[in-house]
Amino acid sequence: MDGKYGPPPDWKANKTAPTGKKPGRIITVSPELGRSFHHFEVKRGVDTWKSDLGCDVEPRFEHGRLIRFEIFGPSANLDATCRAVNKWIERSLTKTSASAGWAKTPAWENRKWTEDKLRQEEKERRQVFRGPVPEDLADKVSLSFLDLL
Image (cartoon, rainbow, N blue to C red):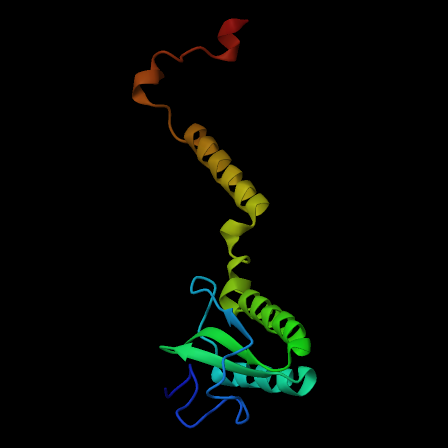
């Protein structure tokens, strides 16, 4: 795969990752929660987990989307690596620019939206009384305050 999403054709996450060995753990990224990760984001995470936790992590892409992580290494480090990968997925899904910008839309600020709606309705109600008297009510409303005295 070439381009912004997915790894370039010559990129391999870890040169030391076992190719014929079954992974110790597999962490899948669900399609409804996943997004297109830039391959440098994933590579940075893979390198960090390798140096800090001592496990090889192999990301698997399909059509430019990250679908799973395969973790290879000693069983003592698998749990810590799984926690780190899950935490990275959780953080990356909530910190996208689209999800951060969604909560700042005017309709999301419920109090402000309600106040604006009430102001608009009040303005429309007052506008009814500022116009001329309708013809069908002109002869019915002929009393003035002085006529009542």
